[in-house]
Amino acid sequence: LHDFSGQLGEQRVHFHAMRLRDSLFLWVGAAPALASLAVAMCSPRDSIPVAASLLGDPSDTASSCLAQRLGRCGRAGRRGPGPGRASPVALRQQPGLGPAEGCGARCPGRGACAAAGCGSFHPVRRTKKQIFVSYNLQNTDSNFTLLIENRIKEEMTAFPDKF
Image 1: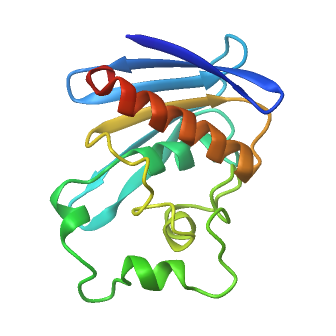
Image 2 (image 1 turned 90 degrees about the vertical axis):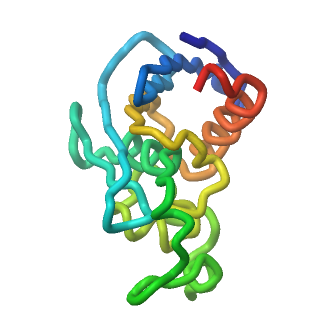
């Protein structure tokens, strides 16, 4: 069990992480609420974690996108491009896709996150386990969610045993 918080822009954001045997639960919010819940896990057929919304409005993909970016697949992620797969460099060089596009709450899913360079190749992805995420903030701007991810990354680096 690990609680931490951060002042991100003008908003105070609280984080609650529970390391479980084979998974991680991460709650992000400003006030006590559980409006959404998503899970991400590895697939034997893809290096990008598969994410699904479990609770809340299915059109609000903030929790599932964050879960997908924080999840990490073991061997599948190190396999390399392979047939039908683009390399990380090729994905990042797609025209019209900046580093933060597709990463906000309106992320249309797995392909868009990966194509934007933040799905299977995101630096925050380091949990190597099934991850449940509850994102309970109104602000779903991609720049703000990047601040959220960076704060989580700082905490994961400082306290790896808590994650």
